[in-house]
Length: 230
Image (cartoon, rainbow, N blue to C red):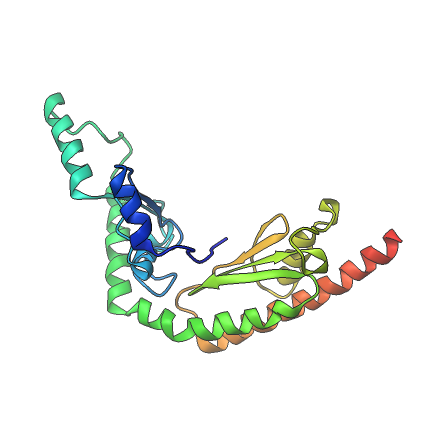
């Protein structure tokens, strides 16, 4: 799940440059407004050599992904293509015109509707509302930025005390969310929220309320499981 940087980006980049190591940024989830900036790298002033993008590139209306490269990388690709007589770094199914057209339109809409500004307007309440549940006895940590949040479920509020895997605490929480009309991503005893970038303030409150209700029901279910184990 998303976490904060422990070292300033300029220090990391200086070390990579010193030893001629390429920096690759995975922005498949974070690009195009998820964190309140067009790219996650913008938030930390990171200047990667390669960037992977997908998902919001077309607002998920069409399958498409891409790799952004620095001029230095592009020059190498171009020089090698010249030796072969053509651009030989793609595939027969790459660059589908329909997918590309959808992506171009999606990017236009992001700009026209100022999506990043909207995210920055509603994200503080989203973060504050969900993180208010950090005191739950089954929550180890809630962390995130912008419109993405992850929750880790542990016993005794300690990462060293996971719940028995067969209990499926993450799945219990996911099922409780679904009962309330909210879909989340479950990965073991970790869950993630990535709501729509266009959601309204009222919808933020709805998410916070449903999260709280699902969490309370999950706490009660865990108490039942603990009692049965004694």
